[in-house]
Length: 135
Image (tube, rainbow, N blue to C red; front, side, top):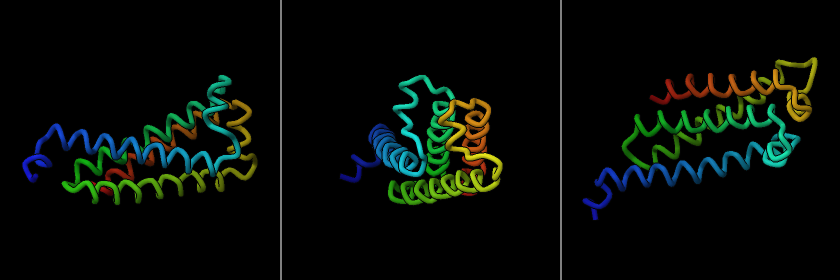
């Protein structure tokens, strides 16, 4: 059985499957903390929501990229990925806190593309910082 798990194709499939599952869970959590429904807004053509959500997807994927490179164990990869996600989520709340003149969620829901773009860049940028810390 050890040879099975040592096969590179099996390892890649395992990492891929786990990351997809984590991505679904993490996006569901983001959906809970935002005041809008991500996929409904995207379906309706809200580009700001698409940019913000895309940034979150890229951010989570980038964090997992670093965890896969840094850890040989699937369990460690998941643990560090969850930790990185929590930090990324904290960054979202900090961004909301640092903009007291307007509400981030409300502006993104109104399709304010400038706010959506900044949200995307913050998620991507923080994922690089988090990933570097994990590596």
